[in-house]
Image (cartoon, rainbow, N blue to C red; front, side, top):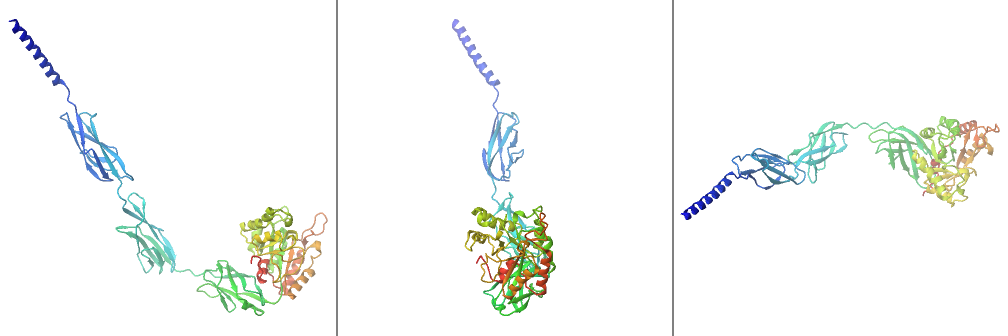
Length: 528
């Protein structure tokens, strides 16, 4: 019996253990898992991919879908975003039963290969005359808004009777008055149209001749006459110059000047030649006289840039249609206290046909300054004047200081400045085709030299005309009085003297040229 009781106890203990184990298993919670398929994918921009989610451990197998980029439906259909470069995005399925349980798929999104989406045409509109051309250009853009290269375009015109266009190059030509619409296409993509308005060719402007520079030439001159410039308005490309019966092709044409080379054979005899200009498709302009002479001639010049010369001397010349050369000290322009012209006055006399000459920056004795200052006084002054819109071709030596010889450092610096000629101020003398162009002589007329009288100056002119020479008359101040003595300023001349000289010139038909024109007449050029 004892054995039986022991057996029963053991059986009961074993049953208790079994029951505990069963109960423990029955209350242990189930683990929820989520799996996504596929776990990775590679798509192009805009492509779709179906994802599925499997939920275990619960009877509620519903999930919610989300993505880091692009879109995903409640059913797991993913649409890739448009990207400019390869991008990685993620799609996640989250268990509704337990939102802490989720699965994520990685998606590589590649940029779509660029395809042509738009063509831009330039210009977007244009206007030309009949016979003129207009270049059109096309630019290709892909779906990302980036320009594309290597795209071949075909250009079209809506009306080829109005405007032809080269289909490959896009060069349009006006054929008749009207409007044509230009476009370009490649494959199935076409640009917006660009209106091209074609107008009738406007008639050329009427030509007005102001003067010839120079207006004289010498009989039997040495070499070609290289620089006859007709000054005026209305000149256009293709204009020709009528020099007597010769029709000359210009070497240069601007709207306000035409330059030609006249053959030396045209200077064989004394005569007056009518010079006119003809624009394409028009009749010749009115003419101006060009004098071929065997007599000497004169130039009238003013040194330093004094206001009295501008206000009292130049008006006398202007009334007679005579042009002068006005030599200017550049640093003194605008110094009205000391009696010099202003910038606006310099511009006014230039526009009136007078020539601007280089008279250095500060008017020193050039042979006494350093090489650096010498360059500044010559080339620097030239640059000053060029910066103001002038192009001086001659220089006047201050105090007649050219260094004593034609080979001096002063003369070399003057030549390096780019001028074609240079003039002295004191020695006096005449010039001709054998004169060294950087040592032109002049005749000063002023109070301190007792040459401020009509008889003296007209005597110089008579001598030049008779001897077939070129005389340069030099003046400085006009009608200025020395406040200390009450006498005329030492370098002044009376306006009455200038008037008397001009009267003599007009009455005797003496030819007057500027200094740069005189160089041309005598065929002198220091830069050759």
